[in-house]
Length: 213
Image (tube, rainbow, N blue to C red; front, top):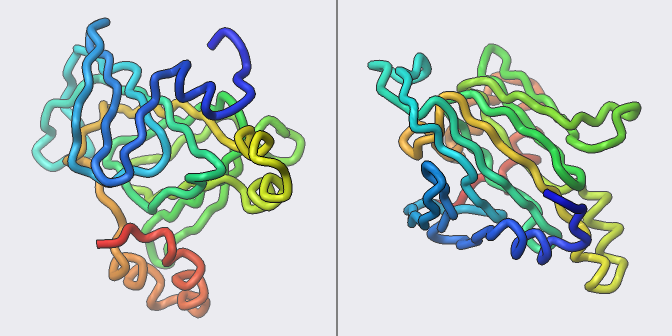
């Protein structure tokens, strides 16, 4: 990017981002040839796939080690009007690189007990924020704009709310395929925390991030 966008509408136009809440449309670039791809999956936020490497590698994260692109990358934009994503998991590992704004990630690593971590991507490194986040294979994740940022923006005129957003790049290694991706279901969330003393409280705090079936 050659400059810092002032509003998320500028970014949508500049990066050719697409948003379809029920059937996502991604703007894809394969070997420098742009095309659009319709995918039957519910999406939140705005997306543009920016690269899909032509080289194939066997993925160690899927049974049978099927072939995948060496890596893929997308822009991902969350906005004041669409601030929260569903909990989901990728079998490949994903690098997240911040371009603008702040965004909070909740990571759930299955185990006995499961580990819940909250990471903030932002520019205030001294406050514990980070510009880079690695999410390993088979870790549940969900992202949202920070509640305090949403609250602050809600008290401003609409033109100021348009400046409340986060833009990141996700690099998936080996490359992303929808068959390697899944959304968390309510029974998954309940099963993860059923044996924890504070499990009911955690489930209650996260259940609104479960994608409706």
